[in-house]
Length: 439
Ligand code: PLP
Image 1 (tube, rainbow, N blue to C red):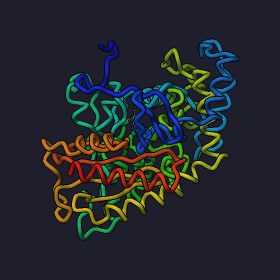
Image 2 (tube, rainbow, N blue to C red; image 1 turned 60 degrees about the vertical axis):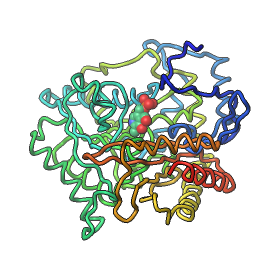
Image 3 (cartoon, rainbow, N blue to C red; image 1 turned 180 degrees about the horizontal axis):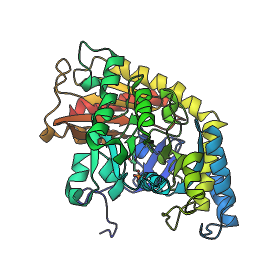
Image 4 (cartoon, helix red, strand yellow; image 1 turned 135 degrees about the horizontal axis):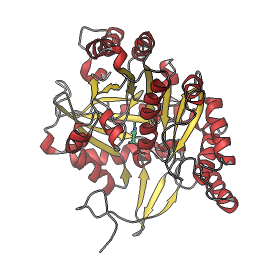
């Protein structure tokens, strides 16, 4: 009998009791290779001594001081470190406790920015159908995951959803990558014209789509066009890097590889690397100043924003990602992982696409590789893969979803950046075992 309210009422979860590098051990002593960092969280593995030391040190000094009264040394250090490595004109860091909170804060900041500028008619967000931005009501409204949205649809703010940049399914056979990227980016322009650009606050997108599609990057040129359109109409570009940020794709911020900078970017997951719950929203000086020189108060805030222990952990994480070379390692080992996946599954009849960047890789599972026909939703192939992998001692993150009426099954891999070549071999072998059992 348990009194914990679990995610799945009918599933019995093993109890995780110990972490060691890329492995988790349960109470029965079973060992699992963490091939997805949980949900792209544990970028440093499960026993990093520097992060653990930073947590202990801060707990000994002062665990908590409310941000209504104080800032803290770790919050100041972390914000400085993030801004020192952030692209473009990002200048301020708002520290929260996770991804949904970061997105929620970003949406409210963007709205308040326009209020401060005397543009209260701007109330609308545009996002994409293939996206997940979190489970709180604002973030859920912005996301495109129909299954998650449906029960709460009457409570969600009206948001436009345009096509994703999803080359595997979206690019026509006779279309170049570039033409495809521009075509789907231009849907933003069309939607802006439809609802009136002056009514729009921001466009929201994940640079590399995670939870709804399994590591789908945009084609080159897509985000440059998006940036141009946003600039032309004076709307903000909010990039959600909760999953794909913090070195996951081989650069600290995923958008660096698209050659653009957002007005607001959200990060979480890898920021605390699982050692502490933390997220952040970074914004430009222009946005910050509009509030600082206007009302002087961001109409937001939670009790645990800027939590000192969480900030101390995240500061140690970001130090390792930047000065410690772990972001470069994500790029390097990500290429090794990609090659290993292509060697093992490049010709697999049920693997339609292998994609991603850095230590962020996705495999799209299909019933027929030639025709790209998806598995029937009732087969719940992703669930069978997850169960078979877990049985084999591999944690991976499979998901199913419906986009434009088409159901897809994907496996997301987001292992710790510390993975060795031998462990990449183990990951691929175990995934192969799972595919043999489940497909
Ligand atoms: N944004 C993206 C891109 C995510 O992938 C997620 C979580 O998967 C979130 C936001 C929400 O983050 P959290 O679960 O920490 O609230």
